[in-house]
Image (cartoon, rainbow, N blue to C red; front, side, top):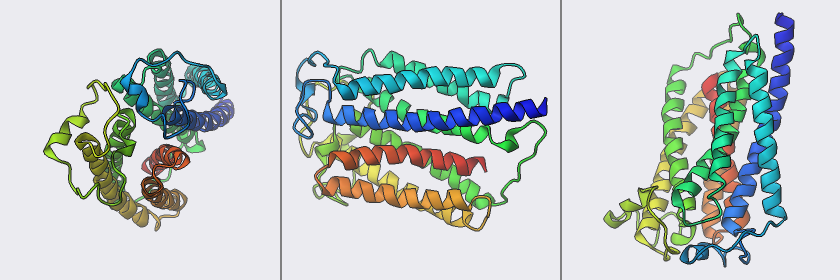
Amino acid sequence: MIAGQELRLRQIRKIACLLTALSLLVVLLSAWLRLDAAGLGCPDWPACYAQLLSSEPPAQTFGPLRLWHRAVASLVLVLACYLAWLCWRRPALPSPAAPASVLVCLVLALAVLGFWSADPRLLLVAFLNILGGLGLVSFAWRVVLASSPDAMPGRVAKLAPGRPARRLLQFGGAVLSLTVILGALIGARYEALACLSVPDCAGHWWPTAAGWEALQAFAAVNGPPAAGEAGGLSLHLLHRWSALLTLCLLGSAGWLALADGAMRKAAIALLLLLSAQVLLGALTVLSGFSLWLAIAHACGAAVLLATLASLLRR
């Protein structure tokens, strides 16, 4: 029986690894579609960016990019359902089954949101789509972690003793989540071009009083935001300050985790990804918001969340 469960865990792990890669591809294609408005009758970035907000969205044209996005998303749904079935069929494997079930719910929720995603003015739909895509990568990777050999019933994993690093990781993970939420709001509100300087925003270093209303994810977006608009500046500055705090907390936790052999590889990956994300964010702004740098920044956030999950599990 144990041998059969080990074989099933290996199968689950292989499918979960494939799902992680496909989910990351969904994030990439989704960011490309959102930024470049592919399939909505617009010219290339940045000429089309946010201009669709000022009028009724045109009918979708199913270009190659949009078709690829739908095909990959459909494959993710099929594999996620099969993965959950593998985890729950008797005898059930509760450790990978929990994140696999969340993964299925996320894919189904994103599929429902897809019915409204063609209208770029629906801020909440775009916001949830961005966060949902990042969640796909994170929970697919959590299934990979939960289907490791130490997840077998009766097998005890070796626990890392670094309590200070664990607390820093937990607190840093919370701040990272806030940073990701703020970044998703910037994307959903089409505020990427609101701040074109680093490290300040048009001479501002802290959000203005008039900009706090930009944090409302339920507000309607009726037109393209103006450059230097208070809400956009506030979101950018909050995102940057939150990212700086994330860098300090997770950087310190990663540095402490280097001393533990079981966590060293994940800690190195975390430190490299943190550095890459900060560099990508700065280069994206300094380049005038290069399309590919913006897409890489979005994908980097997904990989960073998955890496943090690896360290937290250990």
